[in-house]
Image 1 (cartoon, helix red, strand yellow):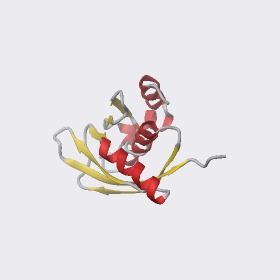
Image 2 (cartoon, one colour):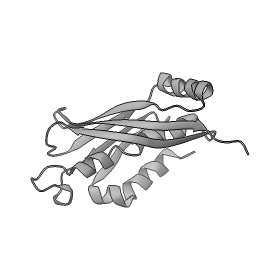
Image 3 (cartoon, helix red, strand yellow):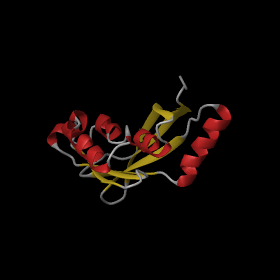
Amino acid sequence: MLKKSTLIRFLSLYPPYLGAGIRVTRVSDDFREIDVQMGLRWWNRNYVGTHFGGSLYSMIDPFLMLMFLENLGRDYVVWDKAATIRFKTPGRGTVFARFRLTEDDIQAVRVAVERDGRAQPTFTVAITDSKGQLVAEAEKVLSVKKKAVA
């Protein structure tokens, strides 16, 4: 599986994140907590001077999938299946997203996969500003199943 420092370095240099100004600021040792932030820059502003919606979505895109891949192990296949984002207020300044997985979240997916062959857990991720005000809320649906045995 990934080393924490490798993940942070890779994502910091990943062109879509580098270009959007997205930074991973924290990854817990067990990959159950990840914090991300994005400052407002001239290159990620929209026409009216607030955060571009595509950049707001990009900042939350791969993390739940990565967290489950790291926590479930190599016997599982995890994909992003669907996402929606609802913009609540214009994003100005630095915005933040925090991802958290609990042991219950992980075990619920394992149980569903064993029972049904597949799980489709849904998570809500908040994007907030420096005052804690909700800028956008995204719903992410994952698809998780066991790898086929050859």
